[in-house]
Length: 343
Image: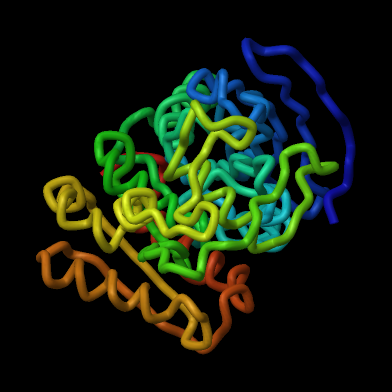
């Protein structure tokens, strides 16, 4: 549990920050902020461009005012909020235990909320959803660098995520090696998207539903369509589905395929080779195992250095454990030396 000792509310530029120090037994600090996304302005879904972001500041941050820190950005999964993962992974307690006493190098952790009217943004650029790739790689990074004592260099920035967040990590990572130098994708979804006739007929969820509620399959299709097949001339959803009136539309289906990392990866080999480290993992009982193995094999075929691990577990059964045992040590090794000095 986090003991609420004080709340500080201050308008700083485009963000409102709430500072919640951890309980006395811990040493880090939590800040829940709201970061405006210029890249998300005017999205046709009507989602707010002002996004909640959870920030963990490491144990020495408050005491060593002259020290700067690397940053790890973690992207959450579909149907969840950033706060869901913050709690599921016990981020403050896990990070404090890992970083206290010098076990791991200290770092700032940032979890942005990408929950949308259809339960998730897919971390893609689209006039319908807003430009989420740009929000993560530009707006958010710029804000964090300007408001916290970061080491504002790609060598000291990492990107990670789980499920939809794993997809976002791979997608954004392929496109933005100038921003990040290490990436860790956990149980990535959507690595191969290939709609087939008769399999994409679920009705899309209506935005007018209270809180965007609707059939789960319809919402997933709607989220993907909004991200990958936007159509500003098709209100009120402003996207196209692979099937319409019982007719399969190959050109629209091809847009799903084109946004599949297993299809995209060959185009981004030079970018991927710029990374200091790339890691992937997936559970042996995860339905996404096969596609994650396919991406591992594709990277090996293309000569992209990376690591790939499987483990006993389902899609969500060991996220917290692996965040502590694998993700944080990975970035501690690949972002900075001890003492906050970049490698």
